[in-house]
Amino acid sequence: MSQVPLLIAIAALAGAAFSGYGVWRRRAVSAWPRAMAEVVATEVIERRQHSQRREHFEQQARYLPRVKVRFEVAGGPVVTDNRRFDAPPSFPEREAAEAWLRDYPTGKTLEVRYDPHDPKLAQFGPSRIPTRRIGLTLFLLAMVGFALFIYLQG
Image (cartoon, rainbow, N blue to C red; front, side):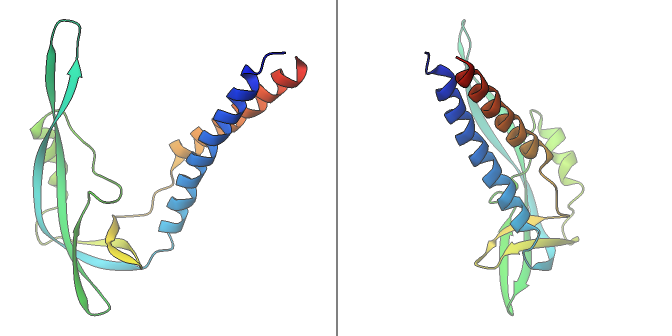
């Protein structure tokens, strides 16, 4: 009897556990304390990603919009940006990243949720449901069931 379905089931279960942990972590973020933050600076960071094609080696530029905010926790100021949690999207063109930043002009007030143990870890804007991660978890659990069914039939 082949052990491959059993190995697939174990790997899929590990993946489902990892993905499920991400869903659980996101749920915990919704319970974090909230604060009103002020946008103090924005910038676009250029990152080079290496890609190798058959003909040659090239670097592809990606542009990351950064939003720096300031808010208060327990009477003390906290300054952080959007790269530590819920990282901003990356764009292939600088203009697209700059357009994304137009929603965050300097001086704008927005709501943030922050980790009570590390306030620099902050989530900007409204809470989001991680539908893709939930879907991945459910898919991997279905693969566990299917692989175990095949293993037990063999």
